[in-house]
Image (tube, rainbow, N blue to C red):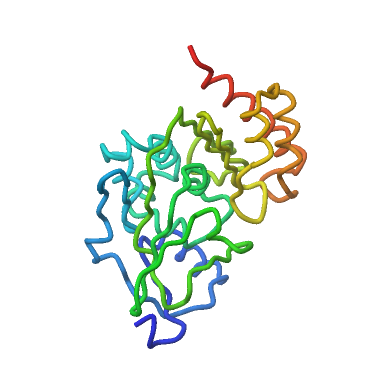
Length: 254
């Protein structure tokens, strides 16, 4: 259907699409309902790879032993997405496809060096999450492709997640951060640029033994926050610096 019928949009939990329809900001009016595709709900370990189906809901990720064991920061992010109704309907694939820079799971996938699995009638391909987004709400997914799964390899080091919003839940993030403290630290942020981003210079500085104040200052220079209805650019810069400090303190050995 995606190949042969122009303008058809995949629909999963509809927690984002229905908002757009209600506000009149969504142009498409033809959808293909994916909700009944049970194989896309599977969460499984395949060798060393954690595979999470695109239709896995936030509730499923919160309850999954495989996710809790291998990617606990994803389960933590899922707990802070909306209320129970949203968690029961919203999906990982939908969060990726919606491409909002404020998506709560996206920094987790960036920090985990995840891979997005795309499938069309012609075949399947894998795209590193780090290169999946090309701009604000824009990605490499073609109109004839579905996001079918996300794959995550083993992660060495302590995982960490924080969401800063008006409330602890049921609020769009002002800043959201996921990080891994290992031999090569990883830090990813949402709501501070047109897309979710990694902080390579900050990561390199921490790996090289830089002091935390130096690393926090570098982090502030790597983001591109804006003033909007939820917050100001200056507030976001201060929060990012504080989150980097908190991450390093919370994950300190011993």
